[in-house]
Length: 348
Image (cartoon, rainbow, N blue to C red; front, side):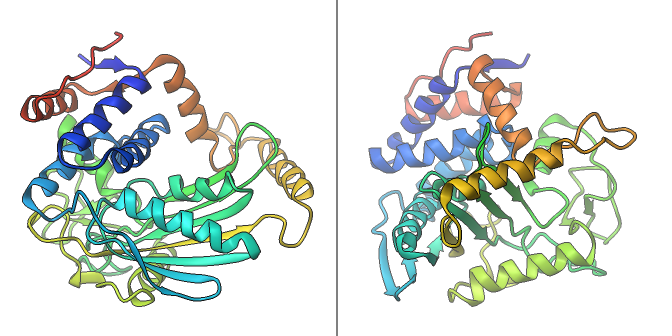
């Protein structure tokens, strides 16, 4: 049976798990915040389902629990961060903080290398929003995506996020992968033994499949458009930063003893770069309100703005708690036993 837990109890559990694995308290707090934010937004594919994997990699030595993060190259509005094979959440947080500081005078781009899976890209874009900036975050991943018209995986799902300040209930937030779905959603379908839509993935023979256990290659969203975006994200995160690209990236789930060596790119732009901040936020709200006021098409109840679903989920989950599937709860309980820590008691 599905159990429900408070946000605070899962946050504490996640932090304690990472600390028990050798991650310093401050870094564990950052990583736990990113992981649980995914759960609050309803993006379970990037939340606690990944925690056992992170711990496994720490124990096998491919994620450094105590990285020495450093800036290895810096320009007037750019910087390159060496993540020392640390948790991607910690590397990403450090790099976006640097991007925000560099953007105090206008705009910045900060790359990161020697990193690992960093969770939801939107978390880092929203960091810039809190500083009254527009935020961008990009990351590549090990190959799962077929180029448009192909049957072999040559690119990662390569997500990116955009966030902007806005008067009203919440910022505008777009956080998407360039595949139709992330691998995490297929992993969840495997856990639940549920079929997937036929346009999500190909099997090992290059044919569409509805069986998540047979899914081997993801498909880009929008055909050639998603493929083009995935390729461009690869350019920004790998070619621009010097990180490995495409098929040269260490797989996330094959050899857990090898560091991922992922690259990321973060950008920040002051929202008052061209107009007053109050004007930007007011007009952003006007734009969003006009979208929401659109007459819904047949089959739709309403027109949404990017971020509406995530922040609605956050409001509900903060109020009612986060629901975990039985299989995930058991995995996390096993992990807690392994580490000698307490798993939280459900509220229902």
